[in-house]
Image (tube, rainbow, N blue to C red; front, side, top):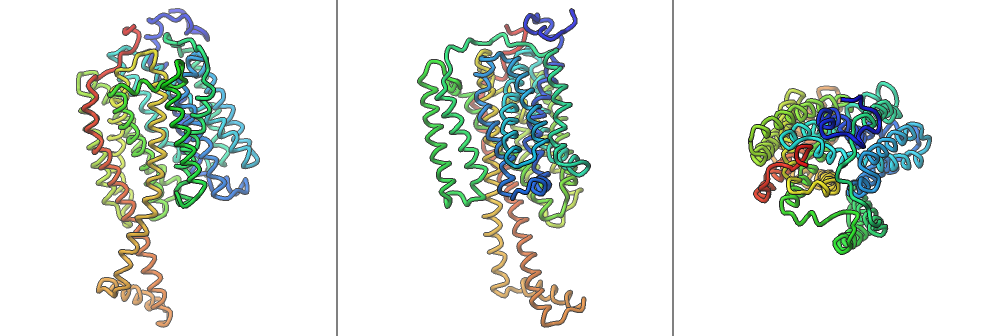
Length: 527
């Protein structure tokens, strides 16, 4: 075979593409990992950025919000943009924009400039995931599509989990700009590999016209929906006129967008693919998968840092085995499916394993340690890893190759929105459950229960033993008891949230019965 040079993909033979399929899969997955790591990497650097930029906590959250909003706007447009520019060109452009914006983020000297460049970074990163997925479906033959999706899935599942670990280490060892500078060498590697190996799509369609109004409605609708989810809990939801505005604007814009896309001849997002029951069922399940993945990644660090006193770096190291377990599950699942094991059966097994791991999380207490955390976290990673790859294949099994770029964009948007909803629900439940459980536990003091009085007497005795006067010991005992009640109420709230997400994942499994076809029609030997 001739040496592979930039531009080779425009005339590459199916045999040449097939020979380099694993390199292609790893190349496009690297781009996805960069994008996903940056979704969560900034969270651990928030205090450092606040100090450097002189921003409040409410202001600095726009560094994350701006990035995610830009992501969710571009995701459903990725199919349209792939046809407009060419899939290979669009992937190259996305990497360039993402990498250059990362440099600008690291050099930002004000909050405004940092937020602006994070939005630009999100616009670049948003096109990577769906474009990568559609590339893998095309370059792998049908019998090996599981291998390609296993590589892709390892990046998708481990990226959000690695963000806090990597961010914590870079911030502690160097400074917060390095959470962006780390993208420069990796982005350059992804760019060079893309130029060398990634082929152009054989299914590019000519764009007859551009629906600018549709793009505007999508941007406004999805953007305000994300703002609604990101800021709802902080502003007490519908008690705030700002949140009401976001809700109304999002509902009106998305509703108008859906109607318009179904009526016009050349939509920017082909919503007609949702007529396929298997694809629609997969969207619902992946929405919940995204909610479970992002919500548990959000809740567990809050639990160990607020109640257990772990640092960001220690928390990241706790989460790392879960990410590795997900990565380990992917190739195993791929081999099983290649040998004829039912994809639906693996999804069921993965969901049950996730539920069992959430039951393990439900058993956590304020006395738990790393040895208690490790088994449930590993099981959680294995369960999610078993869900991802077969669910991808099942969802896209009936989608024609020419429509796959748009369908994967819609699919990944659904998972991303599921993650936002999961985090919003978790944050709201954490506050409401903590308040209600604290009130229930507090009744034992108000009612002078035997257990409450006994605990109070024990605390007072300890204080007296340290030399505190009796007149002060009673008051301090009440204060300590109140703190203990608050801590226990939070612990019970965390446990309840873990269990609810486990039950929800299993509750959605009946939708699998709508997913009859087991594999995607894909690859060089399918055309």
